[in-house]
Image 1 (cartoon, helix red, strand yellow):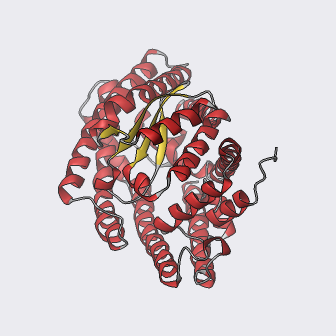
Image 2 (cartoon, rainbow, N blue to C red):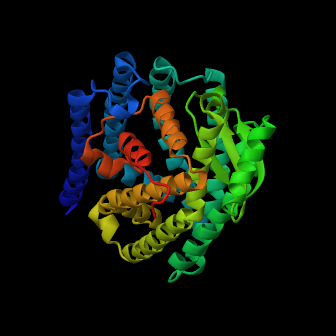
Image 3 (cartoon, one colour):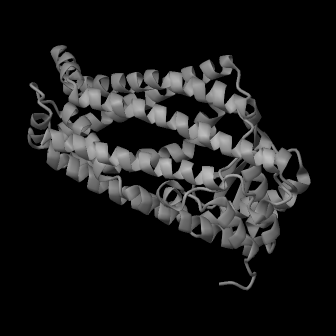
Length: 415
């Protein structure tokens, strides 16, 4: 049975690698062709640079994910879980303390193992292609802040979670689901004011005309904008973005300073109209509803699996513990949930098209929406020729060429 579990995991990994291989082969065959939507915007040299960026990231992704998969296999099937589980239990801590330490140390180990890959991606690949602006000192500062913050949050989550398990052995899965939901909503409220400022500086947009245009645009959708902020994203990267924060009708709009430098006012308004489309179409609410349904099902199945020693017996754990069962259950769910990835991405791409349509209607300016995507794809060296299967499995947004073509064909009278 253990061999079948390992074989199933290997099959899932193999499918993912095969799709990445198809994507690279497709890019090699078509990567020298400039799409009609980008003619006059990029030349052959920039297209080759985009192709090389995708190829290098993909090859590095093979290495990083291969290491991650190997580490998971060694930990679960090579006896490390058995040793680690016995070591934690040997201290004879209380159930809550043991559970907190069990997963906190695993989190630290995962972070430590990811450090070399993060350093290479940031200071080698991203710097090579002109994206990274982060200094080593800032990188270290970010890591320390993230570690301290994640430790505090993880300890709170784990302590409450294991208290609920101990207090309600039969219904902890239901109480835990409610707690995670409440905690997630709470974090959505406080993150813009407490957590995000730890990493970035937020200042009011110093363009009164743009701020007024944004307020007028949002008024049309029923969104009340409390403030429009500029974020100093350029101190870490030249990549661009914009987003809404806040729950309910009152929103804060955050624009990367890199976005303000690269897009015209009309294009910025088009990007924000797209984000407003997500709110108006209740995409966030639908996404939360789906994730919570899956979370509830997953927690109930976890409860059922942990009621017996089946999981620990399967992996040959001599001293069964609730914590070891959770690790094995998580590994099992990573295999079972693989087909859900393409389904959730399909839903996400549908949401993106709806938001694009909404933005085109709201601004009555599909041209600015299309030109903003052209610039963003060009400046971010996006892959203009993804393989259809790869895009179907992994893309949360429609491929950019397809998206631009659809927007340029948009009619303001479309329904």
